[in-house]
Length: 157
Image (cartoon, rainbow, N blue to C red; front, top):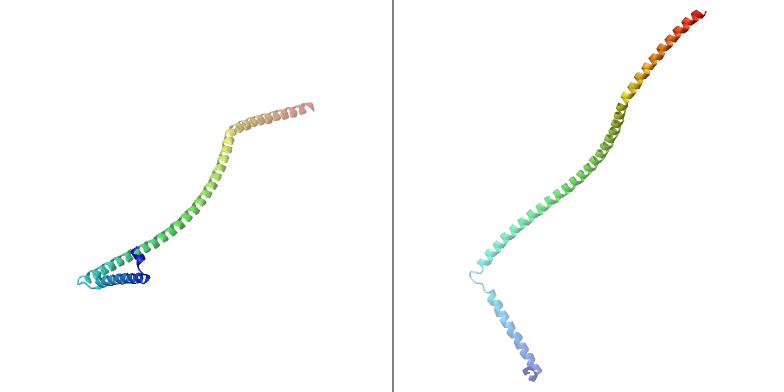
């Protein structure tokens, strides 16, 4: 309410006065901070050196991490290459295993046939012996008949 009774130009001067006061206070604070204190130079210099050491240490750590990352990338690429090579070899071994399984199956079929033949062989041998005996008997009978025929032919004449 007090401001409403004042004249507009008075308001401007009050505002200007307030700005001037703020400026003066800021100026005095700035000058107070800018005044060097005898020990204040040593602390920032030590702080700067300490910060430089920390920065160098951090840079070394960063470089070491970069080197480790590069090594890891190389290892990863090598591992990926080895995985691909192992997969390729695994596929080759699977194909070889399938081929060998087919060969074994063929051998098993051959073995089955040989087993069947071996089981049948004694029967064949017995049959052959029987045939041989029968053939021998036939040959003997033929010889006997031939002798009889030749004896009969001489008697018949």
